[in-house]
Image: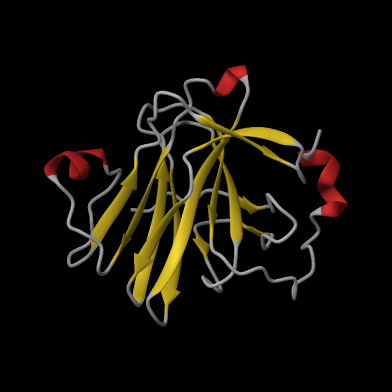
Length: 183
């Protein structure tokens, strides 16, 4: 059973594609850049992004947590699930928040580096802890990205994915609500 939770797309740089969604997010075009902002309110949520690749593609992923004292222990993980990825080890399978579908593999970023990479995001004017960017060579087919909090912590996160910039949809209202997100 999938827990449906609100997700909000906001750009971390002027080029990320913003939009708003009310449940799991279907990435309309995985070949452009997205930043998906979510919030763990209970700590047991699993956020799922769905995407269909028509061809093999190297796609970068990054998990960001706003750098502030209340988030020091907040270390959500993410997994990319899909065809062509390696099968999980028993240790990896135990980390997953739900059963892995038959016939797919997984990449898991545990977001557990002792020293967390810190970046400054200039549009939102905030510092973030970053899982660092990992580019995965993905096969054609259906893929999912799962974001969960293995320790049950609460707080915000941003999962960034994609490469190409696309302004065809404008700024999606980002600057209309900029004061909500930026300092």
